[in-house]
Amino acid sequence: MPKFITIEEAVKLIPNGATVMFGGFMGCGTAHKFLDALSKSDVKDLTMIANDAAMPGGPMGEDHYGCAKLIHNHQVKKLIASHVGLNPEVAQQSMVDCTLEVDLLPQGSMAEMIRAGGAGLGGVLTPTGVGTIIEDSPYCLGTQNIDGKHYLLMKPLHADIAVIGGTKIDKSGNVWYKGSTQNFNVVMATAADIVIAEAEEIVENGEIPPEDVRTLGVFVDYVVQGGNY
Image (cartoon, rainbow, N blue to C red; front, side, top):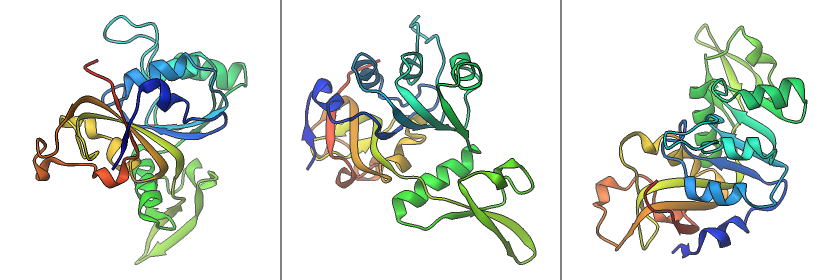
């Protein structure tokens, strides 16, 4: 059974220098209230694994949206992502200021690498990136030829902590995501030592139909109440 704690208590679970996965896709399915609280903390030197770095402005007029808050505050030392083009601060910090290390991965490969990390696999074979600079990436363990086709063997990704955002979470920690908000949340919940789940709504056991559960409560260590964004 997960522990139900406040967002402030959850933020204290993240130490300086931690490797943290953040679910979401350009803010969709992101644990926004948790990220806002983390951005106001003194936590620094994070390695952030996320699909993207979000963007400076949000849909509600925010100055910085989702993970962009942490980038703006220079709380991230290293970013592992698949898309950063909508956040110009990433380019500024990585290419001009040289204060941020950025590793870019193909989006599908990154999702499978996280899945492999959660499943305990030694890597994932993919044709994506063959013949490109991805072959020289530290995440590429080499190449394989199977039935005459070339593949890259990509390392699994694992984190100290995963922070996911769920639409409804029941008292046992089972998570339902509305529509595409599930995105990276599902695989990230399996690939970290500690999983913190932010709920828009906390419900009683049985209110989420079993067939709608996308992240089992056994993967969730802590639940925080986020409310509607």
